[in-house]
Length: 551
Image (cartoon, rainbow, N blue to C red; front, side, top):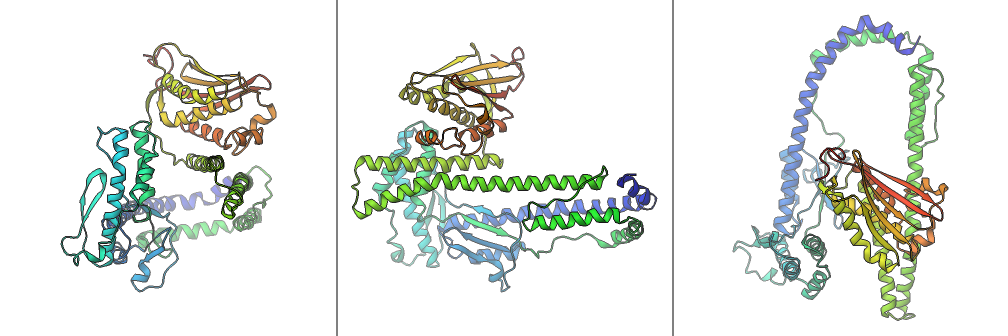
């Protein structure tokens, strides 16, 4: 007789009615109170973050924010701790209210960024935006320094809406002659101009993104830093249920269940104790801990589930260790080389000629690409990568990818062409930029591993309700034993070749994750000496041919 049937037989007659009453009463009260508590917490968080953001944006500094933190803590009843990466912890409401600081709560920290976003009128072209940006940087740098100075002097600051998304600060005529703050400057304007002119004129969106990054970098030294806000403490008292009716009903249930529980023998308690000990060891870091699991009842199945969970955690820990080792391996040697060259330049052993500087710059760009790829992969695997999905034409996607990589392919002596899919539109629904990134990773990988004189083809095909985009190359191919490792982070069939051509070893992992987030898959077929085919399979939004997919 199974464990479930034994327990059911013992407690059914006694506990059904009382348990139902207890569950109904508890659920009714708990649901209402949880909703009220969640709504109140969201309002508190929104009020706190908005007030802090307004303070940073309106004062140009976090100096003096402690009074605002204290007021917010008194109004919301929340324990508030704030800080920045540069200044560390700035204020703790427990300390401000004369309490001993309590251990922090488990809620994730909130990020408050008071820095403005660079904006231009819709009709402006890339060249005009690039020309005006240095003036905007200089103006904001000067204004925010002035506002911060007034704040430190205890003077009021008035904030108005200025041009290009920037705030305009005024002292309201109450500053003491302006003399103490008259020296606030705007920084080296030539450096602002040089940084802005480094942004390529690659279209309004691309230039604006680059200029926003330049604005953030050039104002980082004077603008208020993003603020990390941590709310709550471990001993915060939440809302409690009305205990009277619940306790009365629960007491009867507990008495009946306790009497029945005494009948459960050692056959049940022994595996439970084993699971408890194993769980404790697992929590202390002993990931190799397992429990005996035999039989067909639910206790045995629980033991097997625990063993599977422990095995999964152990595999995850091992993957994390390998990832850390891979990252260290990828960065250690090139960083050591960079350090050696820089020390040689400092000591006068080498001269900083153009060729050496170009080489060092190229190495830095490679390391930056590795870091950027790691960030994209981490966001994608965490489900935090931003997607802007819309209907799009797969033919345009393929052609854009071919155009973007044609110069690189020509330089490598590789023919790059796109074929397939007749006239009309092959519709997809997704983020065109992310899909181009994924497809571009596959094309770039194919071009790198195809010898001069070879060919890379982009083949577009529509089969039923699926759209297939194949990247076919005439490279050396991939051995069958290596195919299961293709999408592993930092894996290369030929590590020396991958490093020499600038590959980070993350492109295939990123491509697969982006395609998976679009409910698709990446298929691989390869033959040594013949070439490889990477196929991106994506679902068409409204079915296949004959159902309105093609225009």
